Length: 175
Ligand SMILES: [Zn+2]
Image (cartoon, rainbow, N blue to C red):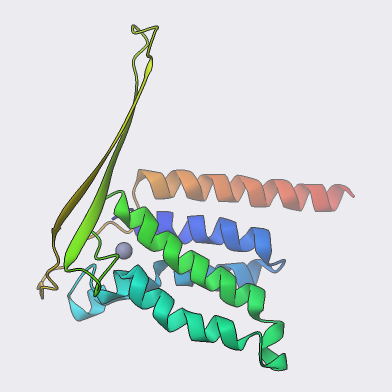
């Protein structure tokens, strides 16, 4: 999986572009790491990583925002929350097997995307390949569920977010 920090900061940057409040964006970004709560049950990439199940659960909440006046104002936030959750599943797809279509299929999928730049090959310097691999889905209890909390992608994203926030703050003060 991408490191937890990468999931969180990517979600924060998206949330921050939608909601004005920094605090709300920080809270909403927690949804971007919610699928990994399955590690508490010592089963990683379990049903919490199913796009099908997530959309089945989220759909009635989103639809109800069209019916109930009290939820109308929440529609954008609900849509954002669904997007952040799905973003986590998509990010995971590029780093390992995800039961994204469970329970429709008992296969977990992994998108092996490779983009290579070869400077010596002037005709075709860019080589892009994508391979969809699958394996049988098994929700197995693991005594030690491993995963990185902060690695290079997350750290780079966090630095980017800090620079963006600093520049926005500076711009505000200069007005
Ligand atoms: Zn995950």
